[in-house]
Image (tube, rainbow, N blue to C red; front, side):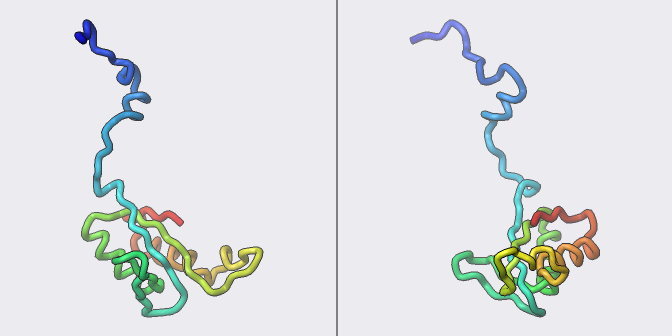
Length: 117
């Protein structure tokens, strides 16, 4: 079957073009996950996630320094704590490892790092 015209329905506007565009892998789109726990000098590998660690805030800053040297500027923090209750009161507690980590990372790295939590 010969086509007399090229169908361009997927190129009609920028939104459609973006929707069907090829995916590109770029270091600026990578997000490094970190699991932050209570304590000091803690860095334990998570069995189900090779190369990913459960780290205390002080250990986390060292890991992020090496990521920044590699060009990874986006991170996602996940909190690991034993203090759990039905109302999740530790989520807004200043002793929460994620809150402590965000404060320390912002102080140390400023706007060089994008943090999601």
